[in-house]
View 1 (spheres, protein in one colour):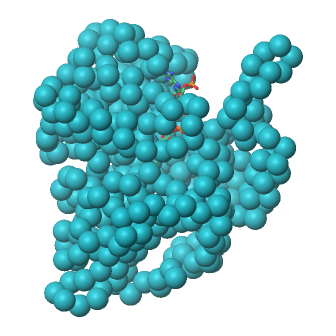
View 2 (tube, protein in one colour):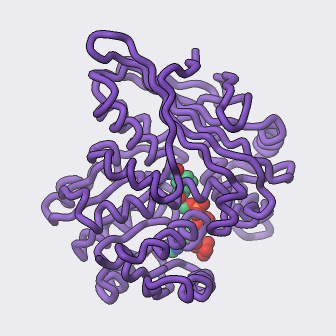
Length: 400
Ligand code: NDP
């Protein structure tokens, strides 16, 4: 069917690459292009004997638009799948515009010096992508990603209007370390140490970090503490889903994680303000990343399950209705299949599916779109097929 260039070769990219290789009818060729080429080569060496997909590798600095343009022009992919970091979103979008190539990512742009996730920078590309006749699909991971597809599916099939959405992200996995992050530590800590927020009656309501706590009994996992966080898909879902009065995002954290995080915060280790150390400028959070376990190394030691989904409350045929859509994913099953834990798996699978939707022309419109703006049905079908089957509950316990 076509060729895809995957930028980045970390935890999420590794899963997406495994999945592309399982799907060689669509992904006839992939190029893995990242900062450290040896990681790309190692993955090629492992996977090439197992797949018909032709794998190529390249070194690229995705902060540099010219370098990206040269590489894209030389490989001529149908889609660029950005699985580097959110800081690279805009340079990669610029390179896609210059080469008229479709763009897919899993996390919205964030400037290095402000820990604030917002779509405004990427939405500002709308007209240019429309004019170029290419698609940018934003947020094709799990959250954002599958949570948006779930919302579009609920809206299409279950409701006339959705008034309340609670997105619940539960990781019941245990890696045995007192403190480690399940994906890129810098991105993860920036996310959880920021103020919380949710949208109510069209306005953002801000909370202190971890101020709002609830306990929820998750199917497949059990009872967990969860905390309200700011999360990027709230912004787009509040605009794109009809009738929203309130939308919140909760993530589970264990006590050990929170105690360590508080301590690291108190001593200044989570700060993104550069400091001078022995004549050299360093960012404390980046230094912390260097001493924490590499998320990729957690795979073999993580046991337990994730349960991520959305509880919807709204109206159907004039009556109140509640509906919960979720996926349960087992860390060890993921490790057996692709050598990664469930956090990377639940992001990498939808990333591959998003790229597939664009490559096959199943999703086709020029411009910059969030995932819930497309027909959810083919994506929902692909989730079941490619390893993230979903479940429904028509009488869920609600979050107060
Ligand atoms: P990793 O840190 O494991 O991987 C990032 C990769 O990008 C690394 O291979 C890194 O190279 C590469 N990279 C970084 N900077 C550059 C650059 N300037 N040029 C080229 N390559 C670069 O991160 P994850 O795999 O955990 O996360 C990837 C993305 O997925 C992030 O944007 C994250 O926010 C997003 N994500 C989304 C989720 C969702 O559900 N929507 C959930 C989890 C993550 P090197 O190997 O040299 O370090």
